[in-house]
Image (cartoon, rainbow, N blue to C red; front, side):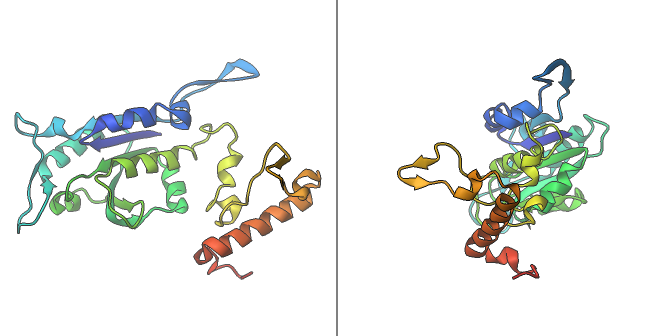
Length: 246
């Protein structure tokens, strides 16, 4: 997969994309037991500065809003030119995504859908937003929100979306089954994940659940399913509304 990001602040992405799973996914990785068996990178990141497409020497891309009011609005021209230029950098078709609080709430099924695409082009808005005319002209474009709150710009939501998508790409995780069992995922039946425990067996006088140490895999699986259901019912009952067992 190729992921492009068009942003006013490309420096914000450096640390995130060069750390942890996101870094590993973009590098060739040799199999521990077979050094000659090398997994090629599963993703490449390309972050482009929107100011590179400004039509003035000061690289200004925003203007006051028509009708008055606080804040500035990003102009059409740099966004349109930037998207066209970035799309031309690779022959694969790019699914355009605008990160905006006015978008569709991001969910795991949406992430799974996007993870199956060859290329994503994310536009990180800033200030009061982007001139609506260029958003309309860029159609089809998917508008996605990471929650019912407002951030200073679309950079952090873009990083969130990148992380959520990349960890689902085959080969990105050390154990691909991990993602399948995560909260909201198919393996968890779209519920919250069950509690997890590890060594020591007793900590601060609190014992790990005996069933997890029993070696009885059927009982362990039944316990985990029940705990996931209980946790979901307590914390996110809305996730159970379409469950026939509730």
